[in-house]
Amino acid sequence: MQLLEERIRRDGVIKEGNVLKVDSFLNHQMDIKLFKEIGKEFKRRFAGEEINKILTIEASGIGIACVVAESFDVPVVFAKKTKTKNIAGDVYTSKVESFTHGRVYDIIVSKEFLTKDDRVLLIDDFLANGKALEGLADLVQLSGATLVGAGIVIEKGFQVGGEIIRSKGIHLESLAIVDGMDEKTGTIQFRKQKWDDLD
View 1: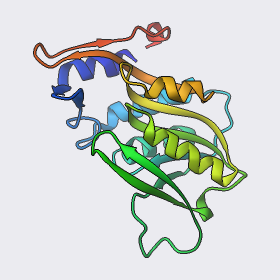
View 2 (view 1 turned 45 degrees about the horizontal axis):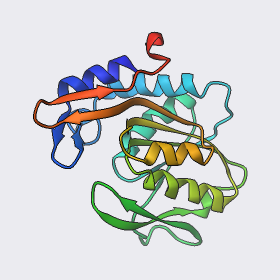
View 3 (view 1 turned 90 degrees about the vertical axis):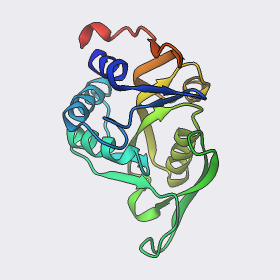
View 4 (view 1 turned 90 degrees about the horizontal axis):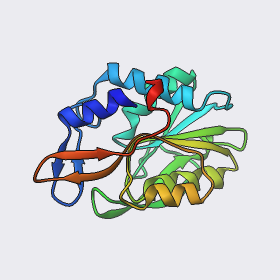
């Protein structure tokens, strides 16, 4: 998605340890006009698929998932990282190791909101090592729902996540795939994708 790549080049900041900061427009301050274009693009890429639920993980996936869900006209469920008093009854639980935070979380979804009748699209902001998507896919499997696919805004193509998710047979669509970043020069290399001419 050319619009997204241009925005990452302009406003993304490369930090030590292969960290790409896009918090000025994606996962802290959010550019809703850009999100609407992201929602339309995911709708196009998953056209013809029956999807009745979007599943994401707190916190930075929620804003994107909500706008994407508007394009599909379906509800969003987000996996919580801590069990709270307002999640009553039975839950599905999976473990997720966070690349950004360097720790393991239990992620939780109430059984009330994920059932065998659901056809689920996973949405998240980043794909690095694939642990968040694996955890979300695990929740879908536990519920008996159908996993239709996964939509990622930015995939780090030089890390293993994309390869792992695709090897599981999951239909993965990443809007921008970063194949390399140079902290010293501030340059970002994107993988050329066959749909770039459709932007």
